[in-house]
Length: 242
Image (cartoon, rainbow, N blue to C red):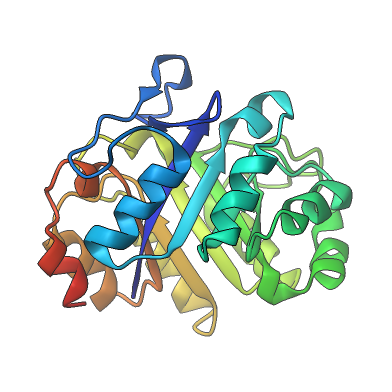
């Protein structure tokens, strides 16, 4: 299982996300990074933990349509593999994200408008360059889908997989930065039971190396982590020994 550090970008700096309350996000204070600049934080993850695949949530793009293009390009030029959620709403947005050097573009339930058009996008982009993010808050869907037929997250996950998506992120923003454990694991198990060959990434609330071990034991392919890396709750040795 991959440990994937998170960069939440707002006003072009890395912020600490807590429980999805975006109006309260502030620049990250980290025990490992010298500043909240994206390059400094990314380098710290690589130097301290040996991690070079990053999940980037570009909140400027998600909220205002202002892509942090320069930051993405700089990170890609430094050799980081980027999984980028930039509020993609159409195929042109997806192309723009990939053009920055991102390895994979994330299609978020929060911003993608039509489930019925997802299959066309999957064919256009290619399933290996696309990840679908099943966005939740306190277990409920966070969505702008105009053709949603069910509010059951498992039903939506099944429809997304049937559209040709091979990799999902399952993330409950209410758990992000809380250190209360990962509430999405039961849903992830159900998704893997339904589609054993799919890849599932999750996170939000990861506290310790034991949480990572539990996710790994349940077939999760990637764990999104931020606060526990910045504050030292998960040690360098715990990451490097995985």
